[in-house]
Amino acid sequence: GLGDIVLPGLLLSFASRFDEAKRLIGVVGGGSGTMRNNGCPDGAVGGGGMMKSSNPLCFLCCCCRGGYFGPVMVAYAIGLLMANAAVYIMEMGQPALLYLVPCCLGTVVYMGHKAGELNDLWEGPRVIRSADALMYGDMSIVCGEDDDEQEERDGNITD
Image (cartoon, rainbow, N blue to C red; front, side):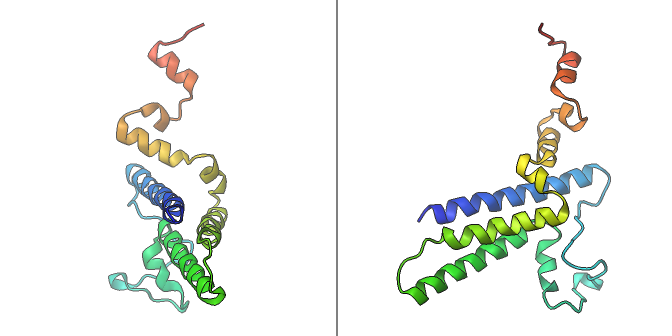
């Protein structure tokens, strides 16, 4: 049904937005905007962007680029394959979310834990708030001011 597309799609769009916010903050911070890839060893990318690694699954590195979107997209496809296989094997309808949620959410949780970003992902990524501030002009978030400091600066103190 509709939930099989919308709910995992929300997670995919969140992963994409998180990746792009990290790239934006990296560019503004003076970097190249590329993220380190935890999935493959450094130097696995050879000349011309071609992968040169002994790891047979390293071909996924080119689509992941250290972010969440690529692996979550692959997990979504695997979840759909599992759901279709279950329908074929059991010869009756199956809820696709039973297969999609563990694949997609499990991938985000595992990757977030591995990268040390799980707490940030759960509480609402600061990098997204910072990217929004850069895009829409609220520099208090980028500068690390809290609400009290911003009110003092703006002269909006109410006692």
